[in-house]
View (spheres, rainbow, N blue to C red):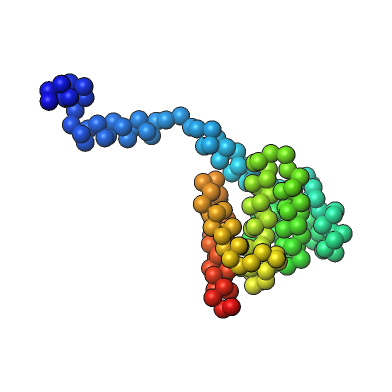
Amino acid sequence: MSRKRKSTFGLRLDQLADIFALAAKDKAPTEADRADKRLAEMLRRHLTEVMPGKSLLFSASSEVSATRQCDLTSLAGWSLLQVLFSPESSVNQLQAVKEASKRLTTRSVSETERAVATTIYHAAIASCLVHHDKKITQHSYDKLDESFALLIEKKWMAQKFIELFSHARRICQSKRRKK
C-alpha cells in the first residue's frame, strides 16, 4: 500500500484530480481548434464585407442574377450579415444568396471555404423561413431540421447563427407536425 502512495508522492485522489484538470486546461491548441478558429474568422470576414466587391456572394452573382432575375444591385452597400439577418431582405434576395452559396460549395477548393459557403446557404434558407415563412429549397422540413441541428453543433458557429438556425428548426418541426 505504501508503494502506491510513493508513486503519487503522497497526494490524495482529489489532489491528483485537480492536477490532471489543470494539465488538461494547459494543453496546446489542437489542429481541430486552429481549424475552428480559421472557419470562424473566414465566416466573420465574409459576413461583414460590404457588397458588391469581392465578397463570397458576388463571386457567383452574375450567374445567379441571370437565372433568378433578382436585382442584386439593391444589395449594394449591405453586408452579407445584414442581408441574412434583416427582416427587410426580400425572398428574391435571400434566394440569390442561397444560389450563389450553393454554387460556391461546389467550386470551393478548401474544406474551410466549403463550410463557410454551406453555412451561408443554410442561413439564407433559415432567414427566409424565419422572416417570410417561405421555404426556398426542395429539401424536406425533416432534412432542413437535421441540417440546422448539425450546424448548431459546430464549435465555430457564431451565436447569431445558432439562434437563427434554432428558430428555423422550430418552424421546420411545426410544419412537419401539421402534415
